[in-house]
Length: 447
Ligand code: UD1
Ligand code: MG
Image (tube, helix red, strand yellow):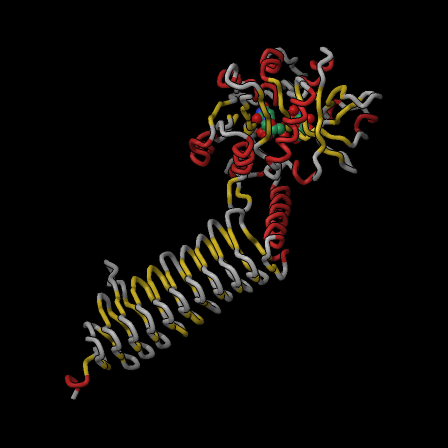
């Protein structure tokens, strides 16, 4: 069976009050539309068809080749929106699945259940319903005494009695494609100018076609995001889902309510995440780490048994047993090798701190390679920028860099060499040498 998925995204999203198209607003660090696309891709390999109106170019920039695009020039309702996909899909798919780009919490499993229900009942269509205590907004599912579906009535058209129905149409459908296309082209136009996809239900009923429904286990799954308040609600639900998954996988979250883990993050067993911690992008964290409180880690790789305390780590690598913080910043290209230590008020950028090397107190390491066993004294700075270009600093194994040393790059400090406190090192220091002063010189030269 050939399936194709249509994702409706032609709404303007006016209620967001934003210059950015609604479905491009980030949720868990990713554009909202990416969740519908991911659910679609989990269901089947064929790239889904995205129906776009307003903001087509911006959407294309974000979603790229992962979807095919059709434009709905005029917003003439959900039935009209799906019809725009007909030229792409007619004859190419046996089953058409319809979802919304602004329903980011829908899971592929639920989508699969809707399709399975339709196939099992050999129905023209199946749709997802949700049962709530306090029905508002969504179309109501009207059933006959034998419990079969009679119609979906929009809230605006519902009688008082129908308004009290607690079973709602979520807006997720699967259709027998051969049945769908001719009927979609024949939908009646409503007084508000729209063609309703929901009218396909009435058509099927009139024809005596079976209709299948599936009820969402969790109403949160069908939360539609129309405002920034909804966006925050969706974010909170997503966060709880992700946090629960990590706790179930053996990660301790001291306070899940203040732990922010994006969907692309991976965490090893027995790691403890303290409150106020944000793990973003493609970050991976090893086992038995202690992260936080109050840390931000973005697109970084953290090995086993690392410690990050109240620090910011971005596009950096920390090998096993290394630690950073409090109040330090590992920036793009920073690498702490096994057991390396960055204490407080340190900054490392595009630099490697070798295995077991230590930089305990307010220092800056930029564009540098520091080998193993080096001690970087308090207040050391690699002067890597001359106002035009960046230059490299090399510090070889077991060197001892005295407090307040200025390393004016390009410069190399040899193996086992020592710089005195306050030295301004403007020339390479030979292995084993001791230099001090401004500019720094060796012992003999000074004598
Ligand atoms: C629709 C259903 C309603 C259901 C509700 C669930 C119809 C007539 N009604 O309501 O029964 O309870 O969804 O959310 O279908 N869109 C387009 N082009 C259009 C119109 C809409 O792409 O011309 C997209 C929107 O971007 C959105 C989705 O379709 O993603 C739903 O549109 P919306 O206006 O929110 O739904 P309703 O029509 O109010
Ligand atoms: Mg509408």
